[in-house]
Amino acid sequence: MKTYKNLWDIFVSDENIYEAIRNVCKHKTTRKKFKDLHDHPEKYIDWIRREALNFHNSGHTPLEIYDGIQRKKRTIIVPDFREQIVHHMAVNVLKPIIMKSMYYHSYGSIPGKGAHKAAAHIRKVIAKGGRDIKFVLKMDVRKYFDSVPHDKLMELIERKIKDTRFVALMREIVNVTDKGIPLGFYTSQWFANWFLSNLDHFIKERLHAKHYYRYMDDMVIFGSNKRRLHEMRRAIATELNKLGLEMKGNWQVFRFHNGKKYRFLDFMGFRFYRTRVTLRRSIMYRICRKAKAMSKKEKETIYDIRQMLSYLGWLKATDTYGIYIERVKPFVNFKRYKKRISSYDRRRIA
Image 1: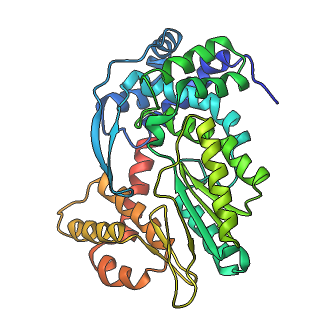
Image 2 (image 1 turned 180 degrees about the horizontal axis):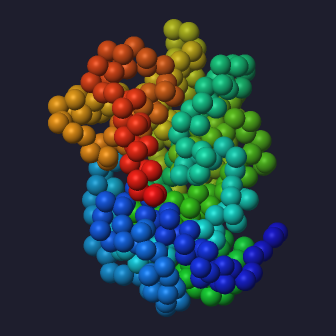
């Protein structure tokens, strides 16, 4: 197993700090503090390095938000200005290490992946059909982010990283909560994906799941044999227990869409059928409402435009052209939105 040393010097290097500044300022330059950081990064280099050298977590007040995709309330912790930069510096160092061990069909919060890429691949697999797409095992982890044990996560980090100063920094970031990893931290999405990477390899290499997909802690396996999928589920539940995690009780094994007797697969906000892919109704309704609201504004904000263009990506990944023509296109002008974003980004970079 490859291990990594001498990461601390990379972490506090000027190059890494400048890259972290670019990343943390993306889409935030309307805020005074981030604008000054973006426009005059050289003023902050020494301060950032000092903060990184003596890094300690700030005090935080958890916030409750509503996740419209998953249709549930979530508690997040918002890092302060200083923490955001240090977190990006840390991820810049961790990213190549994590990516080398990442399962190819893990799509949640990974550069170049995402739900749309996953939907496109699953669509192709379903279109080919065959015995392997007869049944579906769908499962996820109970309160995943809140449940990740610090000792197990640090054990994973310490197995791969042999730089004591960098490991100490990771321990400080992880220990911001008594248990679990906080939603809202940039580091958390990377830790969450990395922590389940060994489970991915177990599912593929030991259980020999041919069509297995993961989006953060949501997992789907297609198979030809219902009993075999139940066996897989029990083995996966056992492996999760070894990690200090628990499979949520709402797991399902069911026959996939097939003629008149069917169930569609609801995964990542999409509904997968044999011959088409649609959006979950709650997401479709939200897109339509947003389009109408945009049409009533005298001038749309950059935030509104980015959100609407993001929704366009959802629509393009599905077979919902009729709804788009009827309920979205009459209210918005995507061509104009793209020009505004392009112009805004050019001015921001200049």
